[in-house]
Amino acid sequence: MSSVDTVRALLDTACLPASEAEIHALAAGFGAYRASIDALYAVDAARYADPALRFRAQAQCAEWDR
Image (cartoon, rainbow, N blue to C red; front, side, top):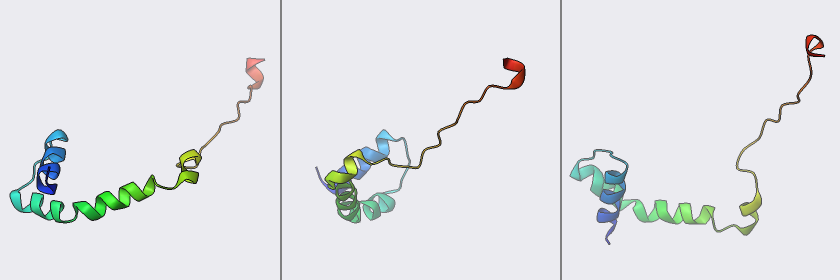
């Protein structure tokens, strides 16, 4: 499957309209985008890292609740 076909299929799946010029422009950069995305998952240590900071609320009972 060519990059143009891949981009067209991805846009169709997401129901995003695009002109032929836009599809070809996206396809021209598809290889670089794909390599960058693959590199994000290539780091073994990152597999177990939290992707974002987390907020953990501390529960406290109100006086009227006791």
